[in-house]
Image (tube, rainbow, N blue to C red; front, side, top):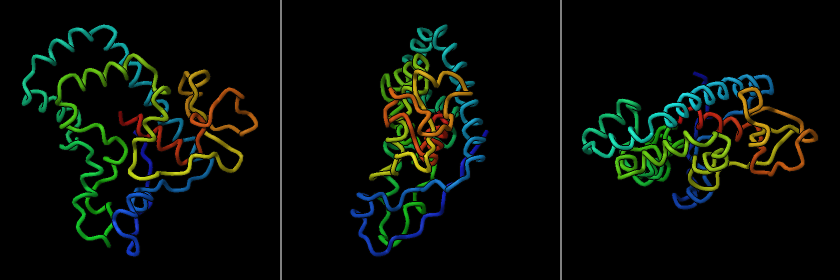
Length: 222
């Protein structure tokens, strides 16, 4: 499975914790990569995303009523065991990214010390939330019944505290995630020139390389 490296976070000693939170100073920052590596990573991410989505979609279409019935009969302990079997490193609490920041007592230290990079990407995947009621069923239903492109903007927006990254395409190139053309691994996450973008594509579906790769990595992990 492809992975993407993030830059180390240097402590911001001149800003208080609240200012750092507001400006997103302590968040992981994607490294700058060249065009060739960007395309290679995007191709690998897209292949894994569509492969997993195809399998999930088939399972939901055939077994969703049975899954719902069995899940609702499970005790909290049984649900916990199932979730941790699926993802052993799953955080325990709601908004684990904020939890790590909240526990940071020394304002001169980076949040990376108290909170791993993975929880920044999918903070909504945690035991506290998914153990409750129908949350897991709704999550699986929405992801299995709809294509990944419909969640692209939301997945990227939820992957940080603070203001995140600038999303304007740079260097006259953009990564395209659009429902009308991103229907296969070959077209999902495709890098094109701005002049080649279809006119109907909104700014929320064209990303610079950093933001596009971040979105693809998140969806691959889901």
